[in-house]
Each structure stands twice: as C-alpha cells, then as structure tokens.
Image 1 (cartoon, rainbow, N blue to C red):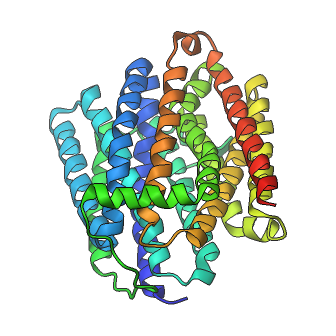
Image 2 (cartoon, rainbow, N blue to C red):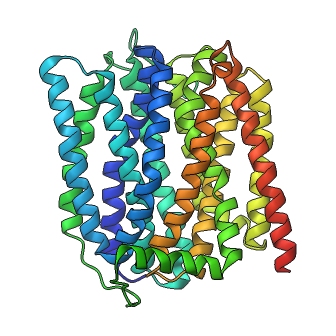
Length: 419
C-alpha cells in the first residue's frame, strides 16, 4: 500500500481526537438526562443542530472536492480546539457551565463530524490504490471503534466515578487501588480541546502523493454542486443504494443521542456506567466487522450482504423493545455494532468503486443531507410527550425495525432489477 506513512499518521490523529470527542459525546446526553434533568431541552437542541447541518453538509461536500483535504483537517481542528477550549476555560474559572454552553460543544462537534468523516474517507480514497479500498475502510472502522471502546470505558469512569475502589464497566466489576471522582463536564471538554491541538501537529507532518490526479472542478459553488447532483441523477442505482444503505446509520445516531440515554435511565433503570458500557459493546461488534465482515461475506453480492445485516439488527431491535434485560441490551448493542459497521464498510467500498474521487465529497454530501432529513424526522417523532411517559422510549427501537424492513424491501427490489 502506497502512502503508508500518511495513512499511519491519519489513523493516529483519528485515534487521539476520537477518544476525547467520544467521551464528550457520550457525556453530554447523559449530562442532560441525569445531571440537570433537561431531556426536552437537549432533544429540541438536537433537532435545531441537526437541521442546521442539512445546509452545512452540502457545502462541506463542495469544499472537500475543491480544496486540499489535509488543510481542511488542520483548519477544522483549529476552529474546534479554540472554541471548545474557550468553553472549558470559562467553566473552569467559574465552576459552572450553562446548558447553552454545554450544548454548543455538542453542536460544534456535530458540525465537525459532518466535514471530518466525509473528508476522512475522501482523503483515504485519494491516497489509496483502488484494489485496497476494502482494506482501507476496514482499517478505518477498526481504528475508529477501538477508540470508541476506550472512550466508552473512560466515559463510564468519568461520568460516575468509583465507590469503595470498585469500578463497574460493561457488566463486570473491577477492583482499583484508588477511587476516581466524577469529572465536571468542563474538565472533559478541556481534555477534548487539548486533543484537537495535538491532531493539528500530526496533520502538519503528513506528506503524500495522490494515487490519481483527477480534474478539480473550480467553478462557482452552485456549478460544483450541480455537477455532483447530475452525477447521481445519471446513476440512479448508486443513488438508491446509497440512501437505503444509510438508514441504519441514521437510526444509530438518533439511538445513541436520544433513545439510548433515556432507555437506560427510564426502562432499564440503570446508571451511567451501563449507558457508557453500551458504547463498549457496540464498538467491540464494530471491530469484529472491521476485521472479518469482508471475509465472511466475500461470496455474497453487496446488496444481499446489506439486506442480511439489516435483517439481523431488526431482530435485535425487536428484542430490545420487549425484553427488560441487561443481557439483551448488551447483546443488542453488540449486534448493532457488527451490523452498522459492516454495512458502512460495504457501502463505502461500493461508493469508492463507483464514484470518482473528484466527485466523492459532493456525492456523499447529498446522501448525508437526505440522511439528516431522516434524522430530523426521527428526532421530532421521539420528542413527542408519549416517549417521555414511563418506559415508552423502548418503542423507539420498534421504529428502527420498521425502518430496516422498509429499506430491505427497496434493496430487494433494486437487486432483482439489477439482475
């Protein structure tokens, strides 16, 4: 594989930033559910933030195809590091953060995700040989989810601390030589901000040679966006597959930030370590996919593979709806990790093989924007008072089942049309 050093540094930077970002993004929803008891404020904020990213995602895709992906990484890390660092400094000085400042960190991280991950995949495609696309996407998944395991473990410790030198993570108890006090939310943000600065240094060291030098479209923003839309219009099979295979990812994001904390708190009646442990099981499943999914499904058509994984996760969602059990919850989180990561690897590899690198940013921004519309609809639905009553949040997983069945139906029709 060419550009090995560049890819290694890319992964290293992703590990460092992903760890602290992961802790922050686990901590913030739990902070609103458990610490200040304002789940409705967070849900409303999440709708507004997600709606805003609809327009940002489209613009971000045009930036990714127009400018140096390395420079985009550096600039976005500077902006996020300075912003989150300022919020953390304010909190440390005053010993307090308002809910608006806490949610602003969540907002800028979500905005960063909407350019970071499309840019990451586009940069990976740019510096990797076509024959290595599947391996690259598997590596990205393993690296990202290994980081998430660590983030989930640290979040479990930092959110709830320890008692009597006993730490409970992922349903297991561990004895420590000392007790850990829960961190304040602004202390977590300070750690997050420092990692952005470290990543800037790493990115500045990256040197690479593009595998294919394709023409960069330098027209107006409208003209560049039009080229991306027209490409997908001329290739409806790619467009439909890209949208339907994205549905599990859309549900997973909403599940993580809206359903999961309330499900743990209101249905399972469990604590922060159980909530954070779900991320650990999810990540273990995703790592499994990163290592083995392409090998296990190598004899299957991509469409059939995605359909199979969606069917499996539907069964898990169904079980989580009706069974109040930590075992079912942890197994369901594991299955979600396996299936979501597996579909993402298959989907990204498919898109890499069918969309040119000089169009990949704009094409994926179209998928992301439509995905955001789906998430807005889901968040709005889950914000209804019905889901705040008793343990009704569990029915959110049944919505996930319905989404998967609808996507499976479309993919089956597309598969036989393709045949």
